[in-house]
Length: 220
Image (tube, rainbow, N blue to C red; front, side, top):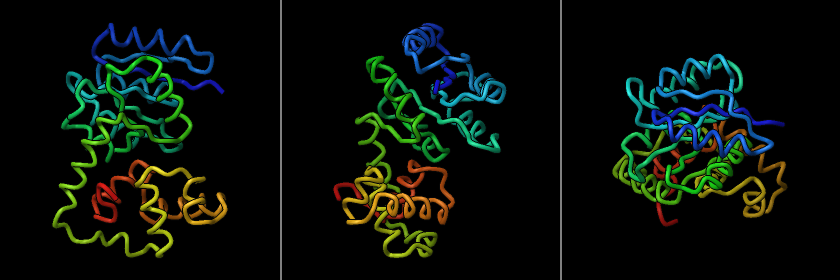
C-alpha cells in the first residue's frame, strides 16, 4: 500500500527537500504541502493523508494547535502526526505528544531517517529522536514529582499495570510477550485493553500517562 503524506512547514526549501526525498520512495506519495498550521488543517481534512509531517513553529496557528485540531476533527482513523522540530528542547513538544503526535524528528536528521520515520509511524508505531526522548523523560520526571497517583490507573489489573510499564519502556507486543512469558496475541489483547480503559489513542499517549502518574520513573 502507498502511504499518503502531507508536509506542513513554513520554509519552502524544507518542504521541497522533504517532498523530493519522500516522492523518490515507491511506497510513499506526497499528496500536499502547507506553509501554515491553518493550511495543514484544511488540507488534512480534504486530502485524508496517512501521515502528516508537522513543523512546530509556524506563523498563525502553530503545529501544536494544528496537531490537536487535525486529530480531533476526524471521526474515523486519524492520520499519524510526525512532529519536526529544529530544537531538541522545544516548549511545544510535550504538548504535541499529549495531543496525540506519534513521533518526533529533528530537522537536521538525515533524510533517510526521515523516510524511515514516516514508514514507522504509518505502521502504527511511535518514534522519537534520542535527544528529544531524553528531554521528554526529564520533563515527565519533573511533572510526576510530588504528584499523587493517577486515579485512572486504579481500574487496571496488576497485569495491565505491568503491561503499561512495559509499553512506557518502549517494548513491542512481541517483547512484552517475552517479558511476561505469554503469547504475543495475549500481549496484544492486554495492550488494547489498557488503551481502552485509559481512553488513550495510542502507545505514545500511554507513555505520557505512565510517566506523569509516576508508574514509571526515568532510569528504571
